[in-house]
Image (cartoon, rainbow, N blue to C red):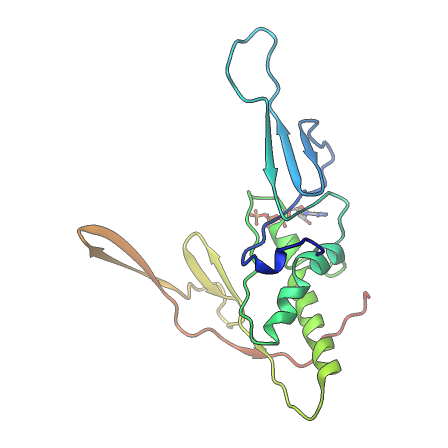
Length: 193
Ligand SMILES: Nc1ncnc2c1ncn2[C@@H]1O[C@H](COP(=O)(O)OP(=O)(O)OP(=O)(O)O)[C@@H](O)[C@H]1O
């Protein structure tokens, strides 16, 4: 993105608004801000703030495509990982807000994970200069504090085990994560693009 000073930032937060058959008239999206209006009843006296503005590095409206979101919010990070820069991309939002759609997508509208793999392979192909690369991946889902190893045969069986203990008389909960299944990735077939 052409945001001056962005190179200095370590964390970038973007917002994506999901399309809705009945979009709220009280939510307005600008390029870098989501404005939420709280309607006041005529006959009620209160001190409520009428408008809240939430700033983001970028706001993607309901029409933003999967490609636009990936190119603007993820591609640079993913390619940076090839140069040894660790990165994390995660989606946060209420249920049904589009986290899975954005991160995984579906067969037709591929999300960040399949696009990342594609971008990695394309970049490696451009770089090939006698080096050998091997790419492997693991896939864990954390649901209600329990982890599931999605590449394991028994992927419905909890993979993490919570361990309760006490520290300074406070109850602590530790999640133990045994090594995950790992799969080598060697071919991405992409008939949709
Ligand atoms: N940008 C979008 N464009 C089109 N459809 C979308 C978009 N975002 C979400 N959807 C659709 O909305 C529905 C809910 O999205 P999704 O399952 O990704 O939500 P979620 O945040 O992962 O929910 P949960 O927390 O319950 O798992 C799905 O049918 C998904 O295909």
